Image 1 (cartoon, rainbow, N blue to C red):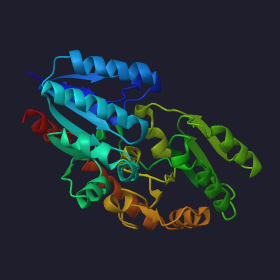
Image 2: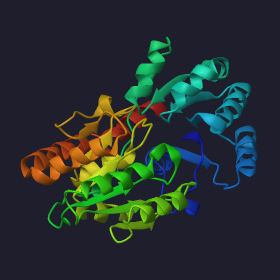
Image 3: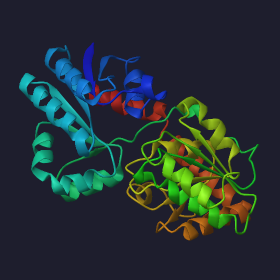
Image 4: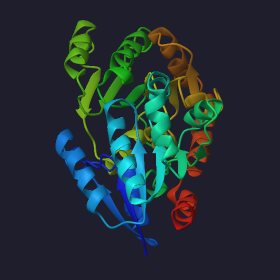
Length: 335
């Protein structure tokens, strides 16, 4: 049996939900592979030490590294060095919409890690396009979803309800979602917003903004929700708001699309590569809440448009089902 070491941050026990790489690893372990994950440690220093130990001492044939920008890139640097030292086949999987900016500022570091790999892949057409323009061969393998966990259902929608599912962090712009609701309520005073996600530093400021705009009774903040429980929110809300500044794939968007909720999103990163405006999503060219509001109101006022986008988004989501994607992973790891 082929033994594969997956290197990254696998914090489902702490977060309450599985990340996409962890889901892939667990699913592949049911197939033809003996897969070990490192690391599950919450503390960053202990996590890095745990990764070093497993990379140095573990028994494996191949290593797969989830590769992100910023401080997390140190994991890829360290693990890839050890894989090269031990003569192990290395697969890099590139994630994160900020990776192009990181590369431009840290070209030598990134190139050194890339040269250690036998195979580089990404679930992002945006990242693939960027790195191929730098002369680096990148393979495309999209992230999967467990389609059976996200059934299409638009039978019990709360009218004029918005849903936002992201972390309360700067790159996801929770304030833009709040301001968009404020603009919408000028025309639809019954409009509401549900916000789901962990606090990554902006929850308090978001609450202050909600109070300032007098939206206390119109906005519900849920906090983190387990992945398996998200479908009920997707199915019961009329529009999904995606206000991120960066996007490299967007698993949450695929899951939402599978449930049929029409999406209004910032047109950044992966979005124009994967989605088509007024075909399977509405894309906004700026971070202006008034422009977001205009697109949301289009869906409120046109059942024909909302239904078209809903059904087409579901068809798009079906192409990312694990049953479709898994054969590509099996082929990759079996080579």
